Image (cartoon, rainbow, N blue to C red):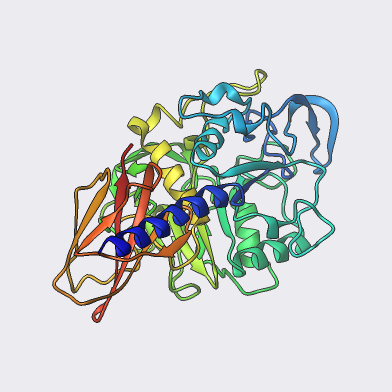
Amino acid sequence: MKNKKSTIQLILMGLVIIVMNSKAQVKILFDNRKAESAGNADWVIDADVHNLSFSSSGAITTTGTESNAQRIPTPAQSGITASTAETFWNGGISALAVDMAKKGYIVESLPYNASLTYSNSTNVQDLSNYKVYVVCEPNIVFTAAEKTAIMNFVKNGGGLYMISDHSVSDRNNDGWDSPKIWTDLMKNNSVQNNPFGIDFDTTSVTGNFSGTFTNVSSNLQDSLLHGPGGNVTEVLWANGTRMTLNPANNASVVGDVYKTSPASGNTNVLVAHAHYFKGKVAAIGDSSPFDDGTGDSNDVLYNGYFTDASGNHQKLLINTIIWLATSSGVATSVTENSRNDFSVVLYPNPVNNELNLITKEKITSVEIISYLGQKTDAEIIDSKINTEMLSEGCYIIRIVTEKGVMNKSFIKAK
């Protein structure tokens, strides 16, 4: 018995080392090539210089006052601790970036003059080097080559976050606003029509509305709504659009939050997600939830991230990026992709040193998975698992029995 306990301690110690090392490898890329800081917007995680100008022809020059995000935010994110304020960086979405850095992810910006490619070894910021690609309200249409890069990125395991704003929100006056740009990506690509099964409303009336909405999916296995960031109960749209889902194009697409009740179906969708081959996509119809109220002093910014919707936006966005960053088929919270025809009890939860696992089924294997998707085999000794060596955070225990697989979440306390 003593040898078995030593073995599981070594295994869990190895898991901690893997998790710690993996945090330096899981990278999130925030796009700033598509005029995301044009007009009264500042969708950047950090900008040391404010000199960009955006013309109606789609050209970008360094003759203006808009945020010019550099690749690596400064100060270095190695200085971020649990108590670091979002003002550590200067950008309208710096709060989200700081939150993700606190969870161990590496965050970078794709500058306006960089290239958007996939599987190009000469490009140091090739999408293949990142797990998640975040595009917050693009205002310049993607080229054919860029669309192919995005599709291949997702197809091969990447996570794409499509963030829209309301219709008629063309901030650089080039004829393209974000709903039209996302629609163009869906309908005019080298793969298929609407491969993700998500269609943004581009009409001037129905695609522009405001309000607080509590029509949240009742699916407790939805990782966007019930994840490490917390449980989401409402959202606030400050001029945003909606989506229509097309399961015929992508059978996996589902809605998370709706404009109308009931919180189900394929219309009036505010937040949605889907799988595509090895990758994942998430979509949201308003950029306001990302705005932390700080950034370019030339813009009028609002705090939608922390204060709107009673703080639910912060929970939703953290949950979404963690879900996108997790390898497909591995749950990030609750019981995504799990079997519900047998029961598993875990206690105590949160746990300090020892986790008890109770089920009537014969267990064939047990794995502990970090929120970054890293997993390792772990032994179970008399229905007990030693968690003493795990670092603080959210984990998934994946239990395989003769009846199937059950994924359960637990929190390791300090």
